Each structure stands twice: as C-alpha cells, then as structure tokens.
Image (cartoon, rainbow, N blue to C red):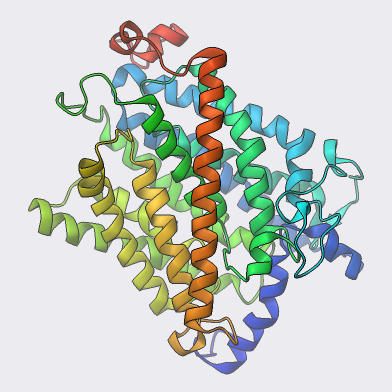
Length: 449
C-alpha cells in the first residue's frame, strides 16, 4: 500500500469498501450480528491509546487552552467546569447516553421513524455488556469509553462561549440537559447507521463536523446571545492572562486530534494513513490560512492566531478526513483558517455578540466549512475517495445536514438555557463578576500572588 499512488483505482476501491464499515462505527451491535467478532489485539491497543488521546484533548488540553485565554481571576472556573462536565457526562453516558446513541431498534435503511432521530433504551445501564463482549475487534468496554470521550469534550467546548459570567451550577445543569436532548440525538442521527436521519440523506461526517463542532458552536452562540456581554465588553480591553498556557493547551488539542480522527475508524487499516495525513495537513494549512489573513488585515501575525489557525484547520478537516485526498485537505484547512479568522473578527464585531473564547467562530464556522467542502472534495474527480459521488448531490446532502444541525441545536439549546435560567439563574451578579468566579464560586485562586 505504501507504494500505491494516492489517486489510484486500487486505493479508491479499498476505501470504498471500507467506508460502509466506518459509517457503522457508531452502530456496533448491528455490525456484530453479521459476523462473529474476533478479538484483535492491535485494534484494541490502538483504540485504548486513541481513547486516552481524546480524553487529553479535554483534560488538560481544552482546560489549558480556555484557562489561559481568560483573566487570571477566572482560570480555575474553566478547569472546574471541564472536570465537572467530564464527571457528570461520564455517568450519564453509562446510564442512558450510550444507548441513545447506538441502539438501532426500529431502524431500517432508507426508512424514517422516531428512531431515525434518537436511539432506544435497550442498552441503558449498559444492559447486555459482558466481560468478553466484542465490537469491531475490540472489547466493547473500550468502544464505550472511546465514545464517552467524544460525549465529554463536545459540551465542554461550549464553556468557552460563556466563560467569566455563567454560574457553575447553571453550567453543569445545562451541560447535562444539553447532552441528553442535543448531543445524544445528534450523534445518533449522524452515526446511527442505516435508518438514521443523516445516513438516509447520504451526508458524510467521519468524525464530528456536525455532531461535535457545529453542534457545540451553535449552542455556544445561543448561550452568549442569551447571557449577554461581559461587564465592560467591548469598551474595556479584556486580555488573556497567560498565552503560553493557552498555546500549550492548543498544542495538546492538536496531538489529541489524531486520536479523535484516526480513532473514529474504530481500528487500524488502509484508511488510517489517509485520515492521519489529512488531519495533519488540515492543521498546517489552517495555520497558514489564518496567518496570511491576519497579516493582510492586521499587519502582523499573533501567537494566539497561529494556535487558533491550527484549531480552525483541525475542525474543518474533521468531517472530511477519510473522504478527501491531500489536495482537498489542504484547501479545506486553508479556507477554514481564513474564514474562521474573519468570523472571530469581522463577523463577531459586526453582529456584536460576546463569544468569550470564540467557540462559534472556530467550531461553528469551521465545522460548516468542513462539512460543506466534504461534499466537494470527496468526489474522485477531485482526488476524493467516495466512489460514485457527484458534487451537487453530495453538497446538497451536506448542506441539509448543516442546516438541520444549526436549527435543531439552536432552538433546543435556547429552550434549555431558558429552563436553567428559571431554575437556578444563568448569570452571576456584577459583584461576583468583578471579584472573579474562582474566588466567588470556588473560594480558590489560580495563583498565590
């Protein structure tokens, strides 16, 4: 395989045969019924590693990235939210989340039903799990834990939008509700296999352009619109307190992203090299796109801009990484860097919302760019690996998935935020905002002096 040209017919055929299995990665039970599972120690070892890498994206990667970008008086609040989200979502994942995502009861290819939108509860409390249960060559416990890390980091991404002004209890309650009514159904619609909504539409999303990034980005937009601006914003300059810390977090996110994307193949095979290469190219091209745009618009590159460009490129390539060639990956990464920069500067300023850490600008916009361009560059004529695909029909399928995700997530997130506001109140008062959430809500300081 290493001597086979990337654009050759043999590789395309290999990938074409592999893609149906990859789309079924989040519906392991249906696949397990077709063939007796056999333990593959190589697959198991890699998926254990990928699970740890994705967990590291949230803790400490995302926590450091977000923590360094806020003011020193609010750093621990971001860390606390990330840890709390990991704990709460991990428990809910076992109780009902895993079942809502992977249960394929009542589903049939090409047919629409309630279960096209959300799975059932037949696997609640991991019913049926045995010590020797296998899925796609690995112990099911490994598969469950891998998917749990996706469920943890997705709501954690949202926290950057309302940083420095949402109550801790409100944030945790909202994340629990959001996981239940937004993330779990969306993950099922995208990865539920034949009969799931977006599978029926023919939309391609390898590792989470819609289910993770657009989903979190749109929820972030709803949250910052409903909460309002931080005190003094935009008239008072609010600067990151520790850029090296934030850039360290971004670097950890980059490293962990290989677990995120390559791990989504649910094993190691011929497609793994393509996914790994495209992931790296997306990040590199994202840096270049952001850097060039920033130089043209602001006259100089910024350290935080370089880190943000990498994240933008990684977000953009996530849905496409198994379906496009290296050329497509470069274009997607480059455009993600350019358009995300414009989103966090011009768009944010024009619309006047206070997305504290630019979650919508990076994840929402980057996810949209990647999802739509997947439909362009997946076609064999442009070096893609999806046999039989055509640009216009595939872009239409991608566009439908983006629009549905945007509307569903925004509406449900808004309703949930309103509910939490009624129950416990969303925003801290002005005195707490002045003191800082670290001291006011946790009675702790990030630094001793």
